[in-house]
Figure 1 (cartoon, rainbow, N blue to C red):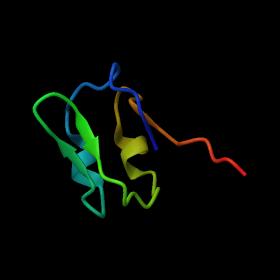
Figure 2: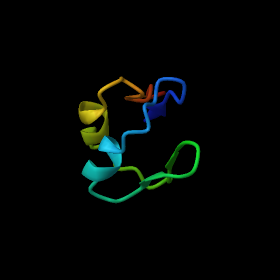
Figure 3: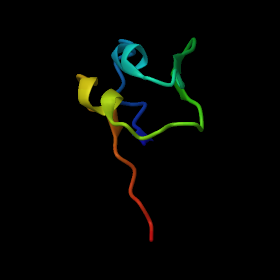
Length: 58
């Protein structure tokens, strides 16, 4: 997953839908732990498009 911090509205919508609880709002930005399962729920609920699917390299 890619995170565009400049777009993030710090609303917490992504944090509330993460099934593995790897997203956390700290004092100044969203933190993403490395155990992301790439389910895409956070991308769907982000109202400002701050999260998007990562490019996969072959």
